[in-house]
Image 1 (cartoon, helix red, strand yellow):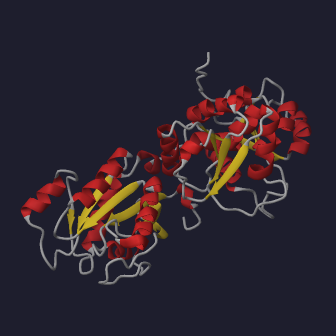
Image 2 (image 1 turned 90 degrees about the vertical axis):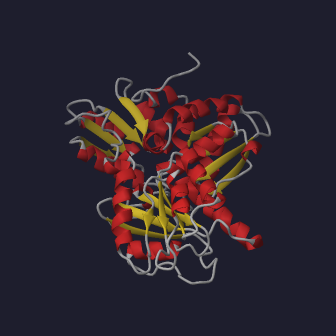
Image 3 (image 1 turned 180 degrees about the vertical axis):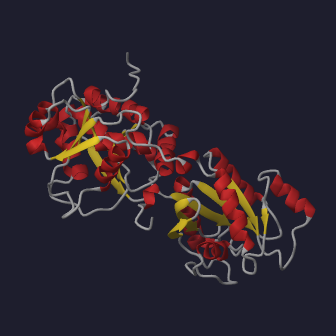
Length: 405
């Protein structure tokens, strides 16, 4: 569990005013002093994350945030960093003191509800002053069962909060979705095409490939792993044709030539576009490629920061494929990490990575922001397949609606 990637963990954000007890709560939850606790308001300046095994939920990430009522220029920067945590929060915990909720907490609650994020409430410092009935009733207008606690003195808050976290935990974390469970059947044969090139980490294969392989084994399938250079030979050696071939998107061109048309073909990136985001939305966004104009800006988003290589997929290969496909002079802008640009109206198209290193909540939040800005969004694998003229084939395993028909 300790090695579970952050992207696969339940993200629980702790929010509230300065000095409400956010850091004390997260320290109590993880039973470690990971956040600095002080009577001085504004001690927490940046989000602090702690990954752990939190039974019975399993692997989670707790995120301690700066107070949403911070002041001054530096305070505004802290608030902006806290707001970015909204995009990857699966469950929000709003903490206050005995004064209850005012517009700060209510605005937080409304933001979370707009995003369909479950909200829990903790009223801290009950050893100093108990909340009055009117203030408590006000909280109950939003959250039915606020937890009354003295976090520093009472360990019962951990049990109470854990019970409520289990009650509101999204179904996807109780019963995680299978990557391929609705496509393959037990004893199906699936070939994984994994190039060993400059981008392949030495001695390992990348996370999406590992997760797909494990998912196939969980579904009792027979998985064969090969490189694109040995794919043709692998297909010839099999007594029966495979149910599916899954390739690294960068090898799409050769693999699509070597795999007969009666065998379904897709890519790891497309599988993760479906798992982490919305495949239909990404497919719709790919249509924008055909109408890009000279001077258009295309935003390429990478969830993680990685060492750029000479033939980098985001900075070299995808731009080259797009320029060849469109014949247009396109400007490319790159963005990495959890931060997301505010100036989406400046772009004609957003191309997102496979998002193996971020959670689904964050990808769906980005899709929502693109829709609000009327910005088409697609994904690496879908973009590559479209540029190579094989997108229809790459999406055959899935139920995708072509709105142009």
